[in-house]
Each structure stands twice: as structure tokens, then as C-alpha cells.
Image (cartoon, rainbow over all chains, first blue to last red; front, side, top):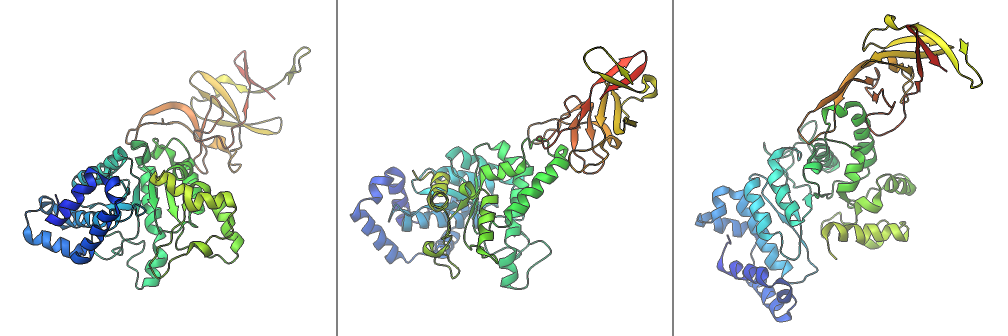
Length: 313
Length: 124
């Protein structure tokens, strides 16, 4: 299931004895040297696998091979180097059954803390994704979504409401649509009931839109509940219990105090996780982000919410 | 209006029982209040004609059943002719309790109904 002998050896080591291995300085040095000598990038790994053609998962499509390559690359090049690195293993949404196999194969490794689904243009509540959810729930991994850069770019990519944006500024501004559509779908399709331990991290989609979304969901639930009788409690409560959001890019309202009100409205003590997006150009640094938080809320946002979601303790 | 004994009970005649159609709310003005009488499932209910949501004339809505809480993907119909649905925003209320079918954000006001000699009286 692996892409070359070097990776085969390294991943086997990780699987057999991960903690003792990665904490050995000698091993860590070797892995770093391996990384330097290899100069491997996922594209190169994927091309090699494609050329060989015998890779079992290649028969399932390049997306599966690429996802496996990414996972093994980050396992080898980061998780084995320093146990402070954590990985949201990626899965290929094109083939949920094969992706579920990948989640079960790698998901229990130390340092893997989430299953990242680069979305297709299929709402997340659709049963297409259920095999992935089932495997992630079984392993205890939250699902992570994040903009991929493919949105609106080709026929199977997630579409933006209204059409394809012309510019980066339009695209970047419209990203919340993706999270809104998919959380909407998850809640009203009853996915959080089907998978009672499932959690979702919606990373980098913003969060200040959340009060409107929660209120609108609840309002519609009181009016149209009979369409979705499996939604037995107010949808806002489901979102607050089961979905988490990241802070970057932090919203900068006209008056700073507005942000405090929004944090209260979205129950940020439970739902918000600080993120930097480093080393992207628009990263947020912890020393100048959300600086007005009360100590208790700061502890929740900057540490505990993430620690609970990723089971870091 | 009729008063009884030491316990103050004031009954107001509203209509004859056979004037009410099954499962069809009918609105009356009783002692200055707009109140709907609903004959359903062998009982007569009296409901203040005001929706707790936005004050709509709730008794101009429809009496119906609803989808009971169910597993994802399953539809189980029940409570037929026990659910009053507001004509404005579709909120559903259980006639037996006055509670909303969704979480309790306001209740219908229900009045005690007294039936005597084919007549319907309300205790206001």
C-alpha cells in the first residue's frame, strides 16, 4: 500500500512503535536526513506511483493515490520528526469506500488527529460520504473541511452560490458559503444523529456569519420541522455541540467590541479554535490576535477547544 | 353567564355542540376575547386565538397531524387532528398541552371547557 521502499520502511516503523521511535534523537536525525536527501514532494510521489501502475490504490483513481502519498509524506517528514506536529490525514472524497480503508489504515497512528475531506460538489449530508464518517467515528477522528482552491474550478468541484467568482477577492470573500451549505446539509440530513460521536472542524471559513446562520436554522426548524423529523432539538444546539470553527482570518469589524458580542453569540468558549494559517501571507499571530479575550475564554480558544477536539491530552 | 357556589366559576355560553364541525376550528368572541373551539378526537378544546409567536389568529389555521420524531430518513405520521398549525409561520402546537411541537417558545392559552345539555360553556 506504500509508494516506495524508503517510505515503506519508515511507515512500518511508525506503525510498530511510534512513540519510542519519534522521540529518539538518532531516529529523528535519520528521518530528517531522509527528508533532505529525498527532496520528495507529493507530486513526485504520485507520478512515480502512476508510472508503476501496480499500486493497489492507483486502480481506484489518482485521487486515492495522491491522498495516500500526502499522508505518507507528512507521516514521514513531519510526524516522525517531532511529536508536536499533528496531521489531519487527507482522504479522497471521490471514492469514500477506499477512503474509509485509508482512515482505518492510518487513523490510529499517533499524531493523526483528524480526517480531512477535500469536498466534491456533493453536500456533506449526502450518503456518498457516510463510509468516511463511519470510519472516522470508529477511530475517533473529527472530520475537517477547509477551502481547497478548487472551488468553482471544474465540474466536480464545490460551486460558489451564483456562479464562478471572477477574482481572488470575490473567491476569498465567498468561502463562508461552502461551510454554510455543508453544515446546513449535515444537520438537516441527520448526519449527526446517524453518527452520534462525529465532530466537524470547519477551518478557515470564518465565523462571524454563524449567529445569522444559527438563528435562521432555528427559525426554519420551527416552521418546517416536519420535513426533517429526525432533527429533534434546535439545530443551533447541534452545531454548537458538534461543529468547531477556526479563527483565521480573524474578522475585523468596524468597532472591536462587536467581535466580543459575536464571540458570545457563537458560544466561542466551545466552538472557536485559534489558528494561524502560518506561513500563508494572511496569517494571524497569537500575540496580536483576539487580545481582548478574558483569561478563561482565551484558554478555551487558544488551547482547550483544540485539545478536546483533537484529543491531545 | 352562570355562577356556582362559593368557588367562583364563571361560565360563558358559547355555542351548541352540534354547531361545531369535526376537526375544523371555529372562532367565537367570548366576553371580549377571540377564542377558537375545536372538536376533535371526541373532545372539544378552547384555544385563545393568538399565536405566541407573532400574535397571529392561530385558530384560523388548520388542524392536522405531524411527523413524529424519527430516525434519519424515516417518516412516521401521527397525532392526527391533534396539532394546530398557525396560518402565518406554520408553527405547530399540541392541542392536548398547548405546547409547541418544537422546543417550548411559548404556549397556546387553553381554556377549560364545560359541556352541559348539548351546550358548550367556557370557564373564563
